[in-house]
Image (cartoon, rainbow, N blue to C red; front, top):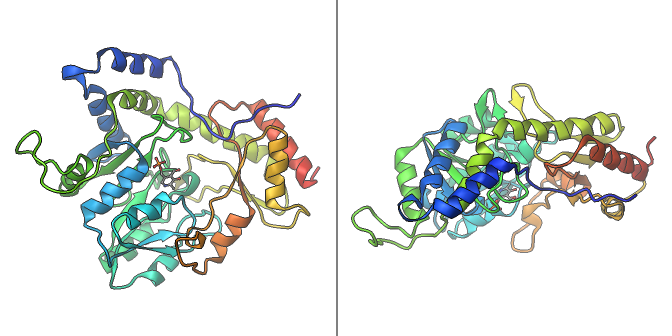
Length: 367
Ligand SMILES: Cc1ncc(COP(=O)(O)O)c(C=O)c1O
């Protein structure tokens, strides 16, 4: 019988239901921010940072980060070609220019050499992305950035729970943004978090986050700010998820290992890696069709879909979207043309993965 194998989705337990119910019943009046406070404290602790701001999205967290850095028209911000549009949008919102650079063939994260080559006198920030859970090469990126006076903001939307030489994603740059959107390993429905160790930056970001209100009075607005607050009810959901962090990450990693076990031997196909010193949350198990299997990537996705297996094409190359000027990024081009994100919903079982992997082998014509 044909099954339904969803591409993404969370793992919700009675704990989440209890916290959200409590927030609905009691999280008003003097309690309106009790779960927000606990969620922010939990995220600061989980990422080993001092300050956290809960936001309505990761896009919003990135936007207030750029605003707090003072990014403005004429500035350049370097981002990887392989990412979701949010990494570029937050730069464009402020009238600055995103500069796109190629990624590593195996980690799919920003190539530090390409970052270095793209730096100009206008470069103010760099936003490495921890693609599908693998942290970017942060030692090299930080060293290059420091040399050139460039601020490093991690786009950790896909990186929650991943480690880089034992340090959590989110603690690896000057600040970091996480996503709690519904397809991410931890969710608040929609949501995000900005974390940092820098008090001044935190205060500046906090100021932008809620319409540039200052501390001198309740409605004292002193600039044109942004509005990216998260609700207490969402924070209740997020808190329960963060309190179950290791259980959720373990299961997401297990999903990847089930795929790896069943597809890792296919010649001409590569999958997510875990470089030495890295702990990858393996948020999105992905296959790259490095050789010609006699069928196009899009046809593979279509045939999987016919069998109820909901996959996605790898991220498009951002500079090749109609609003930008295309740059030369051969690695990102290959990934965009040949990559498939496999279903990774938290509720998937070993049996689901066996089914999906069996169909993929059949479609590719490998025994
Ligand atoms: C790399 C990356 N950055 C940023 C975002 C934006 O996250 P959000 O949808 O929470 O704004 C996403 C969302 O998928 C993402 O994949």
